[in-house]
Amino acid sequence: MSFVKGLKCRECGEAYELKPYHVCEYCFGPLEVEYDYDKISAAVDRKTIEARPPNLWRYRELLPVESEPRIGLYSGFTPLLKADRLAEVLGVSELYVKDDSVNHPTFSYKDRVVSVALTKAVEFGFETVACASTGNLANSVSAHAARAGLRCFIFIPDNLEQGKVVGSAIYNPVPVAISGNYDDVNRLCTEIADKYGWAFANINLRPFYTEGAKTYGFEVAEQLGWKLPQHIVVPTAGGTILPKVAKSFEELQRVGLVEQSGFKIYSAQAAGCAPVVNALHRGTDLIEPVKPHTIAKSIAIGNPADGYYVLGAVRDSGGWGESASDEEIVEAIKLLARTEGVFTEPAGGTTVAVTKKLIEQGRIPRDESIVISITGNGYKTLEAVRDSVPVTHDIAARLDEFDRLYERLEAGKTAGGDQASTIASPATGS
Ligand SMILES: *Cc1c(COP(=O)(O)O)cnc(C)c1O
Ligand SMILES: [Zn+2]
Image (cartoon, rainbow, N blue to C red; front, side, top):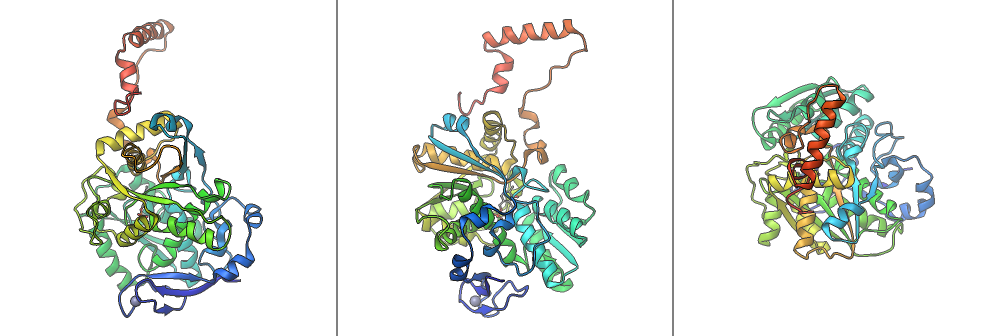
């Protein structure tokens, strides 16, 4: 049974069949999936969902699929950590980390959107899948395509971290690195999609791809005991995940899975690529494209396709946005690691740093529930922190060498020496 009515233009409302269309013929607006919410309300309740396997398809009535999903059966349902040690440093009472750094199989939130996009690609009968990516999407499309036996092309900028490049190539796609930034890659891919007719996860399958991002929000609510958080901070690159998390919260209320309650959503960007946050601060709807310059490469999109919808979702909720410098991002990666044992990439560092800022500014109150969205894994981007972590103490395999090292460390500890200062984060002073 399908709960999908079809596609609809987000701007002019024109209706379309459920086909691999993505732009409106009349106004060039983006298309979005339309559901029959009354039918969904009647068909699902909390118990039904809770009894299903722990993957993103447990919310299948609210996803645009018609067949039995065969891709992404192990993706999603990542941990929601209660982050008490980080909460103490930030001076707040109820803090959670939604941790997609351990999403299966490629350790980022992109495993959600790709699961839905490639399920649709198979339903539509495509044999070749592709994407324009800042790294994580390429990893995920490559891995899911390998498991599904689909031919795969990935297109990435030529300056990505080794972990991101090898982390795609290992799955044996055709990897293509473009000299230029993501916005150049995306422009080329739009032409390739038109000419070759392949399923580009984030271009011609975009209406389906973006729906997969809702599962991040569905899980947060379920894991909070079917309650919405009062505040959630989400990173923004192309602008997919943030409005879709907001949509997920609205849908859960609409179909009666959670009580009506307000939530505020906040956008986090790197200072070196903050077109959406700039527009929020200037109070305009006009997003001025920027040339990205930041270590947070996975969110370095200077001309975000759905930036406009991020502005809408943030403003409708009464939220806000902030940016973080590369230095603040590195400090925040270290802070999350040493307080909660979660190693995120610079996108996650951005979100933690921005959360800290919003709390300090009084934008997020200290006594309400807050979720920090961690969307990627730090093991892929060692370059970002390699030079700012404690160096190894190199010794021979002899007890007397270790004894001497230990004595030095103990002496250093009391004197506030080397060891202590490398590990403590100067940004938080704790
Ligand atoms: C893609 C990505 C995002 C967010 O991108 P949107 O296009 O705004 O959905 C955030 N974090 C990481 C690690 C990503 O790879
Ligand atoms: Zn239209």
